[in-house]
Length: 483
Image 1 (cartoon, rainbow, N blue to C red):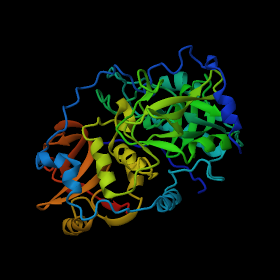
Image 2 (image 1 turned 90 degrees about the vertical axis):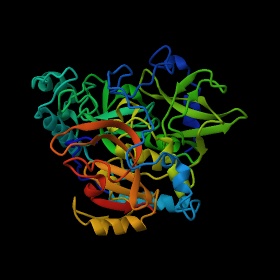
Image 3 (image 1 turned 30 degrees about the vertical axis):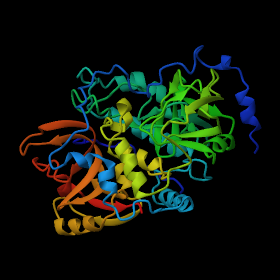
Image 4 (image 1 turned 60 degrees about the vertical axis):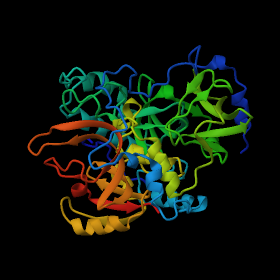
């Protein structure tokens, strides 16, 4: 968990055919791809690097104080439930729930809905505001050097050119060809709040998944970046990671297909061949893959590739039937939610999806996405989803908070702290337990000394209780339920 992160994503006011084209694109020659060996490149998320020097990840699963080894198993928590297989929401109820989320939380956008996308004037103002906000901050590079102010007008502003955004835009429609970072500015340069703070790039908004649909509003002057609206974030993505579809309808036909695989493992290999002798990509939990057909050995799925022109080429790849995937979404039950959460136990923490990791809200987002819940990406917005069970002041209302937790449903209840989100597992002998993705445990009453955790862990709410900030329980400010 980061001490202070200043969000610069300012929310602007927004109002809440046949498949013959796909067959035509399928038949195009792969010679049209941007690289001669397209599809066989390493698919590192934009803004990350496979050789980035990071402190070693503590070996997990970590057994934190107050936690017993048997509590690191999902079955421990599932077996305590009276009816873990009860369907909490049917597919139709989930569709309505997702619609409610979009209506209540403006940051969660159905890009295909008429009238919800911002105007050119709004986009122009937001791009300008994001640039000016970042350029005024004192930030450091990965070498612990102060970033000179002239970097912004000389290197970045010429790429941004918000003045060129017309009031009436011609929107292009695309899909992510791999997991890719959404950034505050069109650069992969890391900008850090503190020296040595390489795990917290202040330009990193989030990581969108393979096949995420986007509306493209603006292009950087060098053509290497798009300014886009994705379903839960707006910002700059590398153009090479977005394939442009011929129309909104064409994109919606694929992105909204009723025939799909949901990735239910931490990640799953998508391969060039049915026997998976060569891996193409390994999309993460919650990724949706359009399903073409099933063979004896593998599912055939459709993948978007980007041609040298920027246009989409659709090509078939393979997911073995033994892979951790689901045809359609998993049933929305406490058993499935808890099992999905524990599949990510020990998975790396990653601010905004950096370094293939998940931050606190990225963890909860992926778990529920694999069950068909379109949560917003930010913890503040997730805490507004579902039913509010209680809202508290830090270090206050302990009795009321305890009473709420005693009645809360494990697996579907979120506990929110300032800058942190946790998934509730239940109460054991007067202790309340959660599973969450956290960066560190603070352990000092008079300094910022901490133990680095940097992964998904099970803990009770006494964690951090030895610090001047107070325990997780002390700092829990809201409890909401998605049931």
